[in-house]
Image (cartoon, rainbow, N blue to C red):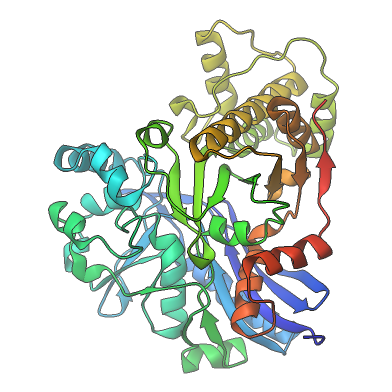
Length: 469
Protein backbone atom coordinates (compact mmCIF):
# COMPACT_ATOMS: atom_id res chain seq x y z
CA UNK A 1 0.00 0.00 0.00
CA UNK A 2 2.98 2.31 -0.08
CA UNK A 3 2.43 3.07 -3.76
CA UNK A 4 0.06 5.89 -4.61
CA UNK A 5 -2.89 4.85 -6.76
CA UNK A 6 -5.09 7.19 -8.82
CA UNK A 7 -8.81 7.32 -9.62
CA UNK A 8 -11.17 9.87 -11.22
CA UNK A 9 -14.09 11.32 -9.24
CA UNK A 10 -17.07 12.98 -10.90
CA UNK A 11 -18.78 15.11 -8.23
CA UNK A 12 -21.95 16.96 -9.23
CA UNK A 13 -23.74 19.56 -7.15
CA UNK A 14 -26.90 21.53 -7.78
CA UNK A 15 -24.95 24.64 -8.84
CA UNK A 16 -21.70 23.23 -10.27
CA UNK A 17 -19.94 20.01 -11.10
CA UNK A 18 -16.34 18.96 -11.34
CA UNK A 19 -14.01 16.16 -12.29
CA UNK A 20 -11.11 15.47 -9.93
CA UNK A 21 -8.15 13.14 -9.74
CA UNK A 22 -7.82 11.35 -6.41
CA UNK A 23 -4.52 9.90 -5.24
CA UNK A 24 -4.47 7.42 -2.37
CA UNK A 25 -1.58 5.80 -0.51
CA UNK A 26 -0.74 4.72 3.03
CA UNK A 27 -0.33 8.33 4.21
CA UNK A 28 -1.64 10.04 1.10
CA UNK A 29 -5.11 11.26 0.24
CA UNK A 30 -5.03 14.07 -2.30
CA UNK A 31 -7.35 15.66 -4.81
CA UNK A 32 -6.47 17.54 -7.96
CA UNK A 33 -9.20 19.61 -9.58
CA UNK A 34 -9.25 18.90 -13.31
CA UNK A 35 -12.29 20.89 -14.37
CA UNK A 36 -15.22 22.74 -12.84
CA UNK A 37 -18.37 23.60 -14.81
CA UNK A 38 -21.66 25.36 -14.05
CA UNK A 39 -24.89 23.46 -13.43
CA UNK A 40 -28.34 24.81 -12.80
CA UNK A 41 -32.00 24.83 -13.75
CA UNK A 42 -33.22 25.65 -17.24
CA UNK A 43 -36.81 26.82 -17.77
CA UNK A 44 -38.53 24.97 -20.65
CA UNK A 45 -42.13 24.99 -21.88
CA UNK A 46 -43.15 22.14 -19.58
CA UNK A 47 -41.22 23.29 -16.50
CA UNK A 48 -37.83 23.40 -14.81
CA UNK A 49 -35.21 20.95 -16.12
CA UNK A 50 -31.48 20.26 -15.89
CA UNK A 51 -29.35 20.90 -18.97
CA UNK A 52 -28.26 17.29 -18.81
CA UNK A 53 -26.68 17.09 -22.29
CA UNK A 54 -24.32 19.94 -21.40
CA UNK A 55 -23.58 18.33 -18.03
CA UNK A 56 -22.71 14.99 -19.63
CA UNK A 57 -20.51 16.70 -22.25
CA UNK A 58 -18.55 18.47 -19.50
CA UNK A 59 -18.09 15.15 -17.64
CA UNK A 60 -16.70 13.27 -20.65
CA UNK A 61 -14.35 16.16 -21.52
CA UNK A 62 -13.24 16.32 -17.88
CA UNK A 63 -12.51 12.58 -17.75
CA UNK A 64 -10.44 12.82 -20.95
CA UNK A 65 -8.42 15.67 -19.42
CA UNK A 66 -7.99 13.70 -16.15
CA UNK A 67 -6.56 10.70 -18.02
CA UNK A 68 -4.29 12.99 -20.05
CA UNK A 69 -2.91 14.48 -16.82
CA UNK A 70 -2.76 11.21 -14.88
CA UNK A 71 -2.46 8.18 -17.21
CA UNK A 72 -2.36 5.81 -14.20
CA UNK A 73 -6.06 6.43 -13.32
CA UNK A 74 -7.65 3.02 -12.63
CA UNK A 75 -11.38 3.75 -12.31
CA UNK A 76 -14.18 6.31 -12.36
CA UNK A 77 -16.75 7.04 -9.61
CA UNK A 78 -19.80 9.35 -9.86
CA UNK A 79 -21.79 11.10 -7.15
CA UNK A 80 -24.46 13.80 -7.38
CA UNK A 81 -27.45 15.39 -5.68
CA UNK A 82 -30.32 12.99 -5.02
CA UNK A 83 -33.96 12.38 -6.12
CA UNK A 84 -33.75 13.50 -9.80
CA UNK A 85 -33.70 11.00 -12.65
CA UNK A 86 -33.78 10.46 -16.39
CA UNK A 87 -35.98 8.05 -18.33
CA UNK A 88 -34.61 5.68 -20.96
CA UNK A 89 -36.49 4.11 -23.84
CA UNK A 90 -34.67 1.90 -26.31
CA UNK A 91 -31.42 2.92 -24.63
CA UNK A 92 -32.00 6.63 -25.36
CA UNK A 93 -32.77 9.46 -22.94
CA UNK A 94 -36.46 10.37 -23.38
CA UNK A 95 -36.12 14.02 -22.25
CA UNK A 96 -33.86 16.31 -20.23
CA UNK A 97 -34.40 15.35 -16.56
CA UNK A 98 -36.73 17.51 -14.48
CA UNK A 99 -35.24 19.70 -11.74
CA UNK A 100 -36.35 18.91 -8.19
CA UNK A 101 -37.53 22.51 -7.68
CA UNK A 102 -40.08 22.15 -10.50
CA UNK A 103 -43.62 22.68 -9.23
CA UNK A 104 -45.07 19.47 -10.74
CA UNK A 105 -44.16 17.44 -7.66
CA UNK A 106 -46.71 19.37 -5.53
CA UNK A 107 -49.49 17.55 -7.39
CA UNK A 108 -47.60 14.29 -6.81
CA UNK A 109 -47.55 14.91 -3.04
CA UNK A 110 -51.33 15.34 -2.87
CA UNK A 111 -51.99 12.25 -4.99
CA UNK A 112 -49.52 10.01 -3.14
CA UNK A 113 -50.72 11.00 0.34
CA UNK A 114 -54.32 10.39 -0.68
CA UNK A 115 -53.42 6.76 -1.47
CA UNK A 116 -50.81 6.14 1.24
CA UNK A 117 -50.82 8.39 4.33
CA UNK A 118 -47.45 9.89 5.24
CA UNK A 119 -47.31 7.95 8.53
CA UNK A 120 -47.39 4.68 6.56
CA UNK A 121 -44.86 5.96 4.02
CA UNK A 122 -42.47 6.79 6.88
CA UNK A 123 -42.87 3.33 8.38
CA UNK A 124 -42.00 1.82 4.98
CA UNK A 125 -39.26 4.10 3.63
CA UNK A 126 -38.04 6.05 6.70
CA UNK A 127 -37.79 9.27 4.68
CA UNK A 128 -38.51 12.78 5.89
CA UNK A 129 -41.14 14.65 3.94
CA UNK A 130 -39.58 16.62 1.12
CA UNK A 131 -42.01 17.67 -1.62
CA UNK A 132 -39.54 16.65 -4.34
CA UNK A 133 -38.79 13.08 -3.21
CA UNK A 134 -38.65 10.88 -6.31
CA UNK A 135 -41.86 8.94 -5.68
CA UNK A 136 -43.87 12.20 -5.88
CA UNK A 137 -42.14 13.02 -9.17
CA UNK A 138 -42.74 9.50 -10.53
CA UNK A 139 -46.43 9.68 -9.62
CA UNK A 140 -47.00 12.64 -12.01
CA UNK A 141 -44.51 11.67 -14.74
CA UNK A 142 -46.64 10.69 -17.73
CA UNK A 143 -43.65 9.30 -19.59
CA UNK A 144 -42.68 6.80 -16.88
CA UNK A 145 -45.16 4.14 -18.05
CA UNK A 146 -43.44 3.91 -21.46
CA UNK A 147 -39.87 3.95 -20.11
CA UNK A 148 -37.60 0.90 -19.97
CA UNK A 149 -35.67 2.35 -17.04
CA UNK A 150 -35.72 5.29 -14.64
CA UNK A 151 -32.16 6.06 -13.57
CA UNK A 152 -31.08 8.54 -10.91
CA UNK A 153 -28.56 11.10 -12.17
CA UNK A 154 -25.29 9.27 -11.22
CA UNK A 155 -26.72 5.95 -12.48
CA UNK A 156 -27.83 7.64 -15.70
CA UNK A 157 -24.29 8.95 -16.29
CA UNK A 158 -22.86 5.50 -15.48
CA UNK A 159 -25.30 3.99 -18.00
CA UNK A 160 -24.26 6.41 -20.74
CA UNK A 161 -20.60 5.61 -20.00
CA UNK A 162 -20.92 1.82 -19.73
CA UNK A 163 -24.25 0.68 -21.17
CA UNK A 164 -25.19 -0.92 -17.83
CA UNK A 165 -28.28 0.37 -16.02
CA UNK A 166 -28.30 -0.11 -12.24
CA UNK A 167 -29.51 1.68 -9.12
CA UNK A 168 -26.85 2.36 -6.50
CA UNK A 169 -28.40 1.70 -3.11
CA UNK A 170 -27.50 4.85 -1.11
CA UNK A 171 -29.11 7.08 -3.73
CA UNK A 172 -32.00 4.68 -4.34
CA UNK A 173 -32.83 5.15 -0.64
CA UNK A 174 -33.76 8.79 -1.41
CA UNK A 175 -36.50 7.83 -3.89
CA UNK A 176 -39.05 6.80 -1.25
CA UNK A 177 -39.43 3.40 -2.94
CA UNK A 178 -36.72 1.53 -1.03
CA UNK A 179 -37.73 -0.42 2.07
CA UNK A 180 -35.97 1.20 5.03
CA UNK A 181 -35.30 -2.16 6.72
CA UNK A 182 -34.87 -4.40 3.67
CA UNK A 183 -32.83 -2.08 1.45
CA UNK A 184 -34.79 -3.53 -1.49
CA UNK A 185 -37.38 -1.97 -3.81
CA UNK A 186 -40.83 -1.80 -2.18
CA UNK A 187 -42.71 -3.16 -5.19
CA UNK A 188 -46.02 -3.33 -3.34
CA UNK A 189 -45.82 0.40 -2.54
CA UNK A 190 -44.92 1.24 -6.16
CA UNK A 191 -47.89 -0.83 -7.40
CA UNK A 192 -50.30 0.92 -5.01
CA UNK A 193 -49.08 4.30 -6.25
CA UNK A 194 -49.43 3.29 -9.89
CA UNK A 195 -45.67 3.58 -10.44
CA UNK A 196 -44.50 1.02 -13.00
CA UNK A 197 -41.99 -1.32 -11.37
CA UNK A 198 -40.55 -2.41 -14.73
CA UNK A 199 -38.56 0.85 -14.83
CA UNK A 200 -36.82 0.17 -11.49
CA UNK A 201 -33.33 -1.24 -12.21
CA UNK A 202 -31.41 -3.83 -10.21
CA UNK A 203 -29.72 -2.54 -7.04
CA UNK A 204 -25.97 -2.50 -6.41
CA UNK A 205 -23.88 -1.51 -3.40
CA UNK A 206 -21.03 1.02 -3.24
CA UNK A 207 -17.81 -0.68 -4.30
CA UNK A 208 -19.45 -2.78 -7.05
CA UNK A 209 -18.14 -2.46 -10.59
CA UNK A 210 -20.99 -1.19 -12.77
CA UNK A 211 -19.19 -1.86 -16.04
CA UNK A 212 -16.36 -0.92 -18.38
CA UNK A 213 -16.47 2.17 -20.57
CA UNK A 214 -18.18 1.64 -23.92
CA UNK A 215 -15.47 1.26 -26.61
CA UNK A 216 -16.21 4.65 -28.26
CA UNK A 217 -15.97 6.40 -24.87
CA UNK A 218 -12.80 4.54 -23.89
CA UNK A 219 -11.32 5.87 -27.15
CA UNK A 220 -12.52 9.41 -26.43
CA UNK A 221 -11.41 9.40 -22.79
CA UNK A 222 -8.11 7.76 -23.64
CA UNK A 223 -8.28 4.61 -21.50
CA UNK A 224 -10.46 1.55 -20.95
CA UNK A 225 -11.69 2.04 -17.38
CA UNK A 226 -14.26 0.51 -15.05
CA UNK A 227 -16.98 2.69 -13.53
CA UNK A 228 -17.24 1.75 -9.84
CA UNK A 229 -20.37 2.49 -7.81
CA UNK A 230 -19.55 4.81 -4.91
CA UNK A 231 -21.93 6.35 -2.37
CA UNK A 232 -23.53 8.00 -5.37
CA UNK A 233 -25.73 10.27 -3.26
CA UNK A 234 -23.22 13.08 -2.59
CA UNK A 235 -24.02 13.08 1.14
CA UNK A 236 -23.33 9.33 1.36
CA UNK A 237 -19.89 10.01 -0.12
CA UNK A 238 -19.35 13.03 2.14
CA UNK A 239 -20.14 11.03 5.29
CA UNK A 240 -17.53 8.40 4.33
CA UNK A 241 -14.94 11.18 4.61
CA UNK A 242 -16.20 12.75 7.85
CA UNK A 243 -13.32 12.04 10.26
CA UNK A 244 -15.77 11.21 13.08
CA UNK A 245 -13.85 11.44 16.34
CA UNK A 246 -16.36 9.16 18.11
CA UNK A 247 -19.74 7.50 17.57
CA UNK A 248 -21.13 10.41 19.60
CA UNK A 249 -20.16 12.96 16.96
CA UNK A 250 -22.80 14.63 14.84
CA UNK A 251 -22.01 15.64 11.27
CA UNK A 252 -23.14 18.50 9.08
CA UNK A 253 -22.45 18.23 5.37
CA UNK A 254 -22.89 21.83 4.34
CA UNK A 255 -23.21 23.30 0.88
CA UNK A 256 -26.43 24.46 -0.80
CA UNK A 257 -28.14 22.30 1.81
CA UNK A 258 -27.02 21.45 5.32
CA UNK A 259 -27.47 17.76 6.07
CA UNK A 260 -27.40 17.47 9.86
CA UNK A 261 -27.36 14.13 11.64
CA UNK A 262 -25.68 11.10 13.14
CA UNK A 263 -24.66 7.72 11.76
CA UNK A 264 -26.66 4.76 13.05
CA UNK A 265 -26.63 0.99 12.66
CA UNK A 266 -30.43 0.67 13.11
CA UNK A 267 -33.30 2.94 12.01
CA UNK A 268 -35.30 5.04 14.51
CA UNK A 269 -38.81 4.74 13.07
CA UNK A 270 -40.61 6.48 15.93
CA UNK A 271 -43.50 8.92 15.76
CA UNK A 272 -41.14 11.52 17.25
CA UNK A 273 -38.60 10.98 14.43
CA UNK A 274 -41.35 11.25 11.82
CA UNK A 275 -42.76 14.43 13.39
CA UNK A 276 -39.27 15.96 13.57
CA UNK A 277 -38.91 15.16 9.84
CA UNK A 278 -35.74 13.11 10.31
CA UNK A 279 -34.79 10.86 7.46
CA UNK A 280 -33.04 7.49 7.09
CA UNK A 281 -30.90 7.59 4.00
CA UNK A 282 -28.61 4.63 3.46
CA UNK A 283 -24.91 5.17 3.87
CA UNK A 284 -21.93 3.16 2.68
CA UNK A 285 -21.56 -0.27 4.35
CA UNK A 286 -25.22 -0.44 5.35
CA UNK A 287 -25.10 2.47 7.80
CA UNK A 288 -28.08 4.77 8.20
CA UNK A 289 -27.59 8.49 7.74
CA UNK A 290 -30.16 9.64 10.29
CA UNK A 291 -30.44 13.29 9.38
CA UNK A 292 -32.53 16.36 8.75
CA UNK A 293 -32.27 18.64 5.70
CA UNK A 294 -31.70 22.23 6.73
CA UNK A 295 -31.51 24.98 4.14
CA UNK A 296 -27.79 25.73 3.99
CA UNK A 297 -25.67 28.30 2.18
CA UNK A 298 -28.33 28.55 -0.54
CA UNK A 299 -29.81 31.46 1.45
CA UNK A 300 -26.50 33.34 1.40
CA UNK A 301 -25.56 32.52 -2.21
CA UNK A 302 -29.03 33.53 -3.51
CA UNK A 303 -28.83 36.79 -1.52
CA UNK A 304 -25.37 37.58 -2.87
CA UNK A 305 -26.58 36.74 -6.38
CA UNK A 306 -29.42 39.28 -6.01
CA UNK A 307 -27.03 41.97 -4.72
CA UNK A 308 -24.60 41.31 -7.57
CA UNK A 309 -27.44 41.70 -10.09
CA UNK A 310 -28.38 44.98 -8.39
CA UNK A 311 -24.77 46.27 -8.40
CA UNK A 312 -23.79 44.87 -11.78
CA UNK A 313 -20.55 43.74 -10.10
CA UNK A 314 -19.18 40.75 -8.20
CA UNK A 315 -19.20 40.76 -4.39
CA UNK A 316 -16.10 39.66 -2.44
CA UNK A 317 -17.65 37.00 -0.18
CA UNK A 318 -14.75 36.67 2.33
CA UNK A 319 -14.79 40.46 2.71
CA UNK A 320 -18.57 40.46 3.27
CA UNK A 321 -18.26 37.68 5.89
CA UNK A 322 -15.44 39.54 7.70
CA UNK A 323 -17.66 42.60 7.89
CA UNK A 324 -20.57 40.40 9.05
CA UNK A 325 -18.40 38.95 11.84
CA UNK A 326 -17.74 42.45 13.14
CA UNK A 327 -21.45 43.31 13.50
CA UNK A 328 -22.38 43.90 17.15
CA UNK A 329 -25.67 44.10 19.03
CA UNK A 330 -28.88 42.13 18.66
CA UNK A 331 -28.93 39.77 15.65
CA UNK A 332 -32.42 39.07 14.28
CA UNK A 333 -33.02 35.39 13.47
CA UNK A 334 -35.52 33.77 11.09
CA UNK A 335 -36.49 30.17 10.33
CA UNK A 336 -33.98 29.05 7.69
CA UNK A 337 -36.44 26.35 6.60
CA UNK A 338 -39.34 28.75 5.95
CA UNK A 339 -41.12 27.54 2.80
CA UNK A 340 -41.16 31.10 1.45
CA UNK A 341 -37.38 30.84 1.01
CA UNK A 342 -37.24 27.60 -0.99
CA UNK A 343 -37.51 28.92 -4.57
CA UNK A 344 -34.91 30.92 -6.52
CA UNK A 345 -35.25 34.71 -7.00
CA UNK A 346 -35.02 37.92 -4.93
CA UNK A 347 -33.91 36.27 -1.70
CA UNK A 348 -33.19 39.53 0.21
CA UNK A 349 -36.78 40.71 -0.28
CA UNK A 350 -38.20 37.37 0.82
CA UNK A 351 -36.01 37.16 3.92
CA UNK A 352 -37.09 40.72 4.77
CA UNK A 353 -40.75 39.63 4.42
CA UNK A 354 -40.17 36.71 6.82
CA UNK A 355 -38.42 38.98 9.35
CA UNK A 356 -41.18 41.62 9.22
CA UNK A 357 -43.92 38.99 9.55
CA UNK A 358 -42.41 37.88 12.88
CA UNK A 359 -41.92 41.46 14.06
CA UNK A 360 -38.10 41.44 13.76
CA UNK A 361 -36.04 44.38 12.47
CA UNK A 362 -34.65 44.04 8.94
CA UNK A 363 -30.91 44.91 8.89
CA UNK A 364 -30.42 47.76 6.42
CA UNK A 365 -26.67 47.23 5.89
CA UNK A 366 -25.45 44.23 3.92
CA UNK A 367 -22.98 42.95 6.58
CA UNK A 368 -25.81 42.92 9.15
CA UNK A 369 -28.11 41.16 6.69
CA UNK A 370 -25.43 38.53 5.93
CA UNK A 371 -24.86 38.05 9.68
CA UNK A 372 -28.60 37.45 10.20
CA UNK A 373 -28.54 34.80 7.44
CA UNK A 374 -25.46 32.98 8.78
CA UNK A 375 -26.69 33.03 12.41
CA UNK A 376 -30.12 31.78 11.30
CA UNK A 377 -28.52 28.85 9.43
CA UNK A 378 -26.35 28.12 12.52
CA UNK A 379 -29.42 28.24 14.79
CA UNK A 380 -31.19 25.73 12.51
CA UNK A 381 -28.08 23.49 12.54
CA UNK A 382 -27.86 23.61 16.36
CA UNK A 383 -31.56 22.81 16.71
CA UNK A 384 -31.24 19.81 14.33
CA UNK A 385 -28.18 18.52 16.26
CA UNK A 386 -30.13 18.66 19.55
CA UNK A 387 -33.05 16.84 17.92
CA UNK A 388 -30.74 14.16 16.45
CA UNK A 389 -29.28 13.59 19.92
CA UNK A 390 -32.64 13.24 21.63
CA UNK A 391 -34.22 11.02 18.92
CA UNK A 392 -31.24 8.65 18.73
CA UNK A 393 -30.56 8.59 22.49
CA UNK A 394 -26.97 9.77 21.96
CA UNK A 395 -25.10 12.17 24.18
CA UNK A 396 -23.25 14.12 21.51
CA UNK A 397 -19.77 15.49 22.22
CA UNK A 398 -18.82 17.26 18.97
CA UNK A 399 -19.97 18.30 15.52
CA UNK A 400 -17.99 17.63 12.34
CA UNK A 401 -18.82 20.20 9.69
CA UNK A 402 -17.62 19.25 6.20
CA UNK A 403 -18.12 20.59 2.68
CA UNK A 404 -18.02 24.16 1.40
CA UNK A 405 -19.57 25.48 4.62
CA UNK A 406 -16.45 24.44 6.55
CA UNK A 407 -14.61 27.39 4.92
CA UNK A 408 -17.15 29.81 6.40
CA UNK A 409 -15.51 30.56 9.77
CA UNK A 410 -18.42 32.73 10.86
CA UNK A 411 -20.84 29.83 10.30
CA UNK A 412 -18.55 27.33 12.10
CA UNK A 413 -18.16 29.60 15.16
CA UNK A 414 -21.88 30.47 15.23
CA UNK A 415 -22.76 26.74 15.07
CA UNK A 416 -20.39 26.03 18.00
CA UNK A 417 -21.82 28.94 20.00
CA UNK A 418 -25.45 28.01 19.37
CA UNK A 419 -25.01 24.25 19.94
CA UNK A 420 -22.62 24.50 22.89
CA UNK A 421 -20.44 21.84 21.21
CA UNK A 422 -17.00 22.09 19.59
CA UNK A 423 -17.18 22.21 15.79
CA UNK A 424 -14.43 20.42 13.84
CA UNK A 425 -14.37 21.96 10.38
CA UNK A 426 -13.18 20.14 7.27
CA UNK A 427 -12.41 18.58 4.95
CA UNK A 428 -13.95 20.98 2.44
CA UNK A 429 -13.89 18.32 -0.27
CA UNK A 430 -15.48 15.56 1.81
CA UNK A 431 -17.77 14.41 -1.01
CA UNK A 432 -14.99 13.94 -3.57
CA UNK A 433 -12.74 12.32 -0.93
CA UNK A 434 -15.47 9.83 0.00
CA UNK A 435 -16.01 9.04 -3.69
CA UNK A 436 -12.24 8.45 -4.11
CA UNK A 437 -11.94 6.32 -0.95
CA UNK A 438 -14.74 3.92 -1.93
CA UNK A 439 -13.18 3.44 -5.38
CA UNK A 440 -9.71 2.96 -3.87
CA UNK A 441 -11.03 0.39 -1.38
CA UNK A 442 -12.72 -1.55 -4.21
CA UNK A 443 -9.35 -1.60 -6.02
CA UNK A 444 -7.57 -2.86 -2.88
CA UNK A 445 -5.75 0.47 -2.58
CA UNK A 446 -7.31 1.69 0.70
CA UNK A 447 -8.19 0.13 4.06
CA UNK A 448 -11.21 -2.12 4.52
CA UNK A 449 -13.39 -0.52 7.19
CA UNK A 450 -15.11 2.87 7.29
CA UNK A 451 -13.32 3.62 10.56
CA UNK A 452 -9.92 3.01 8.92
CA UNK A 453 -10.87 5.15 5.92
CA UNK A 454 -11.84 7.98 8.31
CA UNK A 455 -8.54 7.62 10.18
CA UNK A 456 -6.75 8.18 6.86
CA UNK A 457 -8.88 11.33 6.31
CA UNK A 458 -8.09 12.64 9.81
CA UNK A 459 -4.37 11.95 9.31
CA UNK A 460 -4.20 13.75 5.96
CA UNK A 461 -6.79 16.53 6.50
CA UNK A 462 -6.61 17.80 10.06
CA UNK A 463 -9.85 19.60 10.99
CA UNK A 464 -9.94 23.17 12.33
CA UNK A 465 -11.51 23.38 15.78
CA UNK A 466 -14.05 26.04 16.89
CA UNK A 467 -14.93 25.95 20.59
CA UNK A 468 -18.22 27.42 21.82
CA UNK A 469 -17.76 30.89 23.35
